[in-house]
Length: 131
Image (cartoon, rainbow, N blue to C red; front, side, top):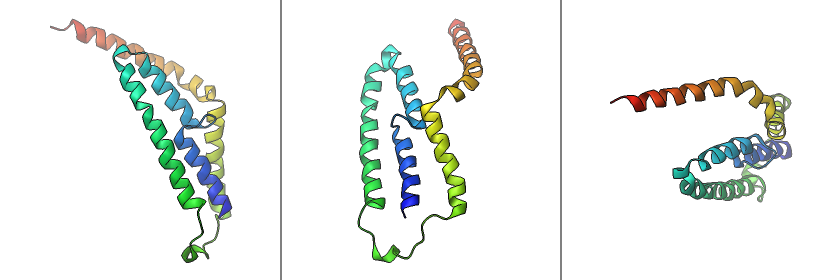
């Protein structure tokens, strides 16, 4: 099942947050944002250990499921068909495209995220004034 293994490898690497895949951008921004808050620096550093643990179990799973010795019980299963490739290849391309060029989507979200941040900052200041 080499086609299915290839698609799943891309999905696993994106879930790992490897550079060049869409998961990397979200992890990077989360940790950079949390590290800037003085009270969260130690927690942020400790939580990066979760990335290492995630990499370990994801790579272990990939190896055990797709790269190990083939079980005779599953020998007759067909590889991925055309309809499944038609749905999964565009998703894999989006994962790669957003990992390589994330500003495409970030530019779309910037104004609404800035508006939300301003709203939260104003709400926090108003809540701090309450007795």
